[in-house]
Structures are given as C-alpha cells and as structure tokens.
Image (cartoon, rainbow, N blue to C red; front, side, top):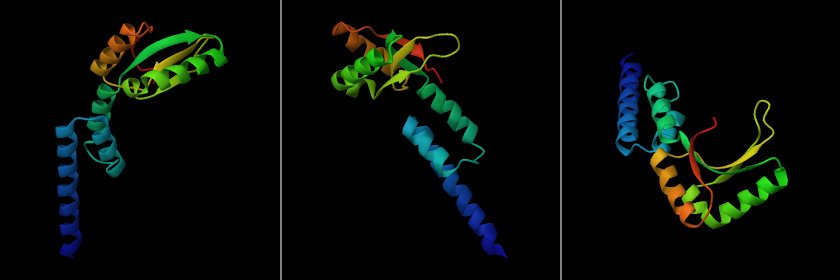
Length: 133
C-alpha cells in the first residue's frame, strides 16, 4: 500500500532534480532532455518557454527563388561555417512568397550575432532574424 506512495515520492524527487539540473545548465540540450523524460511535468511549459528563448533566432544567410541555388549555397556555407552555424537549412517559401531562405540552425540571439559577425568578416551576407518556426 505504501510502496506506490513511496515510488510517487521518488519519481517526484527525480523530476525536481532533473528540472533543477536543466535550469542550472540553461542549455537547449538540457531542456530537451528534461522534456523527453518528463513531457507531462508541471514544469514542461516552463521548459518549452526556456527552449524557445534559447533557440529563437537564426542567421539568415541568403535567399533565392531557385531550389538548386539555395541547396548549393547551403552546402557551401555548411562546409565552410558549419561549426559556427551548427547547421545550415533551406527554408521553403511560405504564403504567397516564392523565395527560399538559407538559414542557420536555431540558436540563441547571442550565438546568432557572434556567428554573423564572423561570417561578415569573411564577406558573407548574414542577418540575425527570429526563427521561422
């Protein structure tokens, strides 16, 4: 009879410890790990909000109407600046737009600014923008 209560207490303590760990590291990976383990936690919405703040920006690297040109630019930039940009993706047009955008992976605003500063020094167009998602 008390075993179930004890297990609930242990689970609650583990969940609280995981939440405190995610908050102390304050990284996207930490919050994603917490959400994967405890998707129904009372802290899940807080973790999702923190994750959005940490990954709410991207570096806009170029735009074109040609899928082939966008793919070529993305591959070139990923090879040259992949470690700074984490990843390079082609974002398809939305709404009535016919323009594809080449963007970095989602990142913090500071990381996006740092990446853009480095890319601009290499004469690459780069603009910090809010994530498309």
